[in-house]
Length: 172
Picture (cartoon, one colour):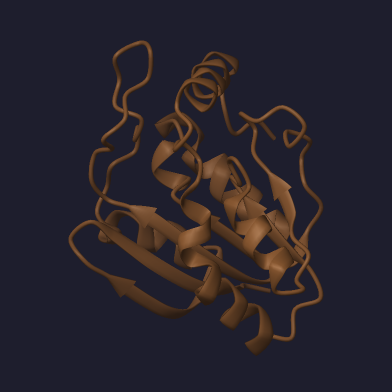
């Protein structure tokens, strides 16, 4: 299932190479990820859109292993295996509009139990080399919720003017 165009993959690889801070926000959510991981009794964890791997580094220090997937990072671009807990933070807004449904279907495929999704709802401060804002899908939480609820049972939602955090279980 294709979730990114080759052109966009290349633009993101370029941004990863040029900007040391691009793809490092995962570590900010390590406490929340660890909390959910322990609460659900997860045996496996996937950082979907892991970027430079900041989350995996922190989790490792806490004795938790984490598989990493990022289609724009060489060595992390092999489609991932399912995991009990999938964390996907600051990724959805980067997905090309034509691939949103495939991306969400892929999140459903790789999530065995629980999805922790963080979505930014404002334009990014970074730009791609073709001049576009790095956030290609900037939509309010109300736009995302029907798509998420069609795939996941919502356990929790926290939202503010800039982002939202969705915690959900796979709909069986």
